Image (cartoon, rainbow, N blue to C red; front, side, top):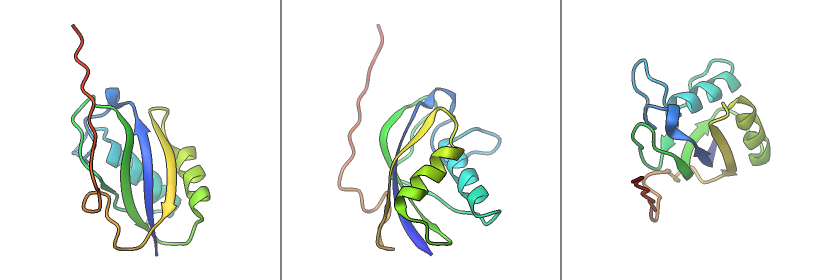
Length: 117
């Protein structure tokens, strides 16, 4: 089992937020579906550094997950990007210690709010 830290960006326009919700398209759902495809059906749970609401974009959200196998970080980045829709991009993939958790290991978060007139 290999533990990964992945940084991603997404356009949240067509997502019902980050967290999996029944019958809704979510960022976590798309990521888990892609990773499950990579494992040929073995479910992979993804932990996010935080949740976003419907329509919210991200420029550098961090996720972490255990992957059953040993794929080099650069290959994981390429493999995940090959399965991502156009509104999600994997920016960076790293192999990290098993005790790293995207939410609990975060040292801070930055938010930018833009309000249109």
